[in-house]
Length: 232
Ligand SMILES: *Cc1c(COP(=O)(O)O)cnc(C)c1O
Image (tube, rainbow, N blue to C red; front, side):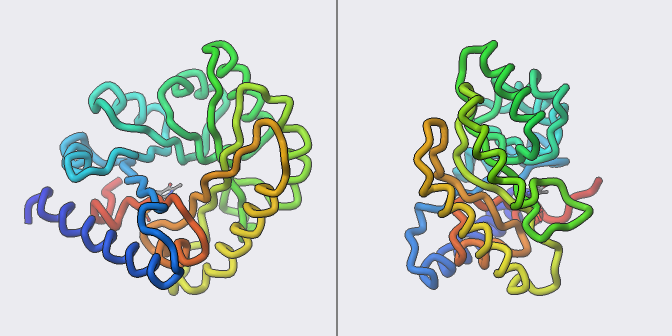
């Protein structure tokens, strides 16, 4: 099959599955945003996805995002990987949303660079929800401290939470983590603070987006499910 047919077919399967999860959870399908994860994917295939109506793309490396940024117009880029502080300045004016903010140090740097360009940058805090040693993200016990201090970062707006759930055989095994994320999200939503506006719960990838949606995700980040296995 040609790239176009593969991506078309895969995207339709994903849309069908999203619809099923929405029906099951009594949610509206247009609440769910698909971020097509384009890391390692070439421009041709990204354009195919764009022509199928997906306008939000996720990258996990600054360099790769920059290379693609100039080649594809009128789309939104999401930063979803571990972001080194020294790379913030390169991407700050190019991203719609940074999903993977995981330290005070990174908040400080984003805030500083956002100030320089006179913008407010929307971010999500990444939570290491299963406390995996191999994963980035804040431990939930460190959230209160960050939330106490977030008002100091005037050029940042906290728009939600993100997680990468464990790699599991059965997606059902991640339901408990997604539920925990949802609870944290709702807790923070209840806080009335200047630069907190909880809109996005970014969770669910190819293996587990159905369960994530059932548990409240409104952004799912899908790579393999759309493009097939990545060749690194
Ligand atoms: C690669 C990646 C994804 C997409 O993973 P798939 O299993 O290919 O859907 C989602 N989120 C993050 C943070 C990633 O790095």
